[in-house]
Amino acid sequence: MTEGPGGDERRHLLREYREFIRANHPDRGGDPDEFVAGLERLRALMDAAPPAATHLSGKAAETTVFRRGRLPGRLWRHLTERQRRRNNPRVE
Image (cartoon, rainbow, N blue to C red; front, side, top):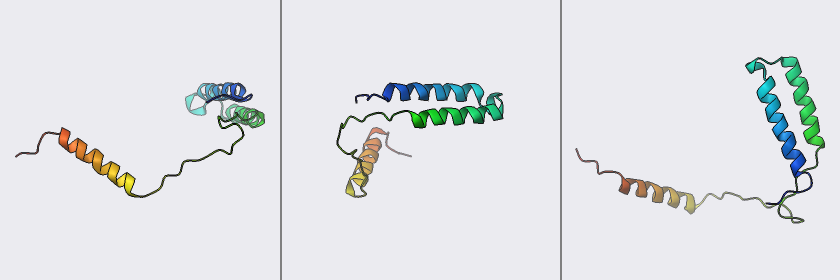
C-alpha cells in the first residue's frame, strides 16, 4: 500500500499521541488536568492533518462483507476434524 501526502505526518502524530499517553496517563502518575488538555491538543492536530491516501487512487474504497453461509460451517468442521485426527484416540 502506498502512502499519500498526509501519511507520514499522520503516522508521526499517532506516534506522538501514544508516547504522550504512556508518559502522562493519570494511572501512571500523570496530572489528570494536563492529560486531558494534552489529549485535546493532539486530537485537534490529528483532525487537522490531511488523511492518508488509499492504494485505490480514485476508486471508491471497497469493503469486505462477511456473509453467513456454508463456508464458515464447512471451515469449522474441517478444522475440528483435522484436530481430532491429530489427537491421540480416547481409549479408556
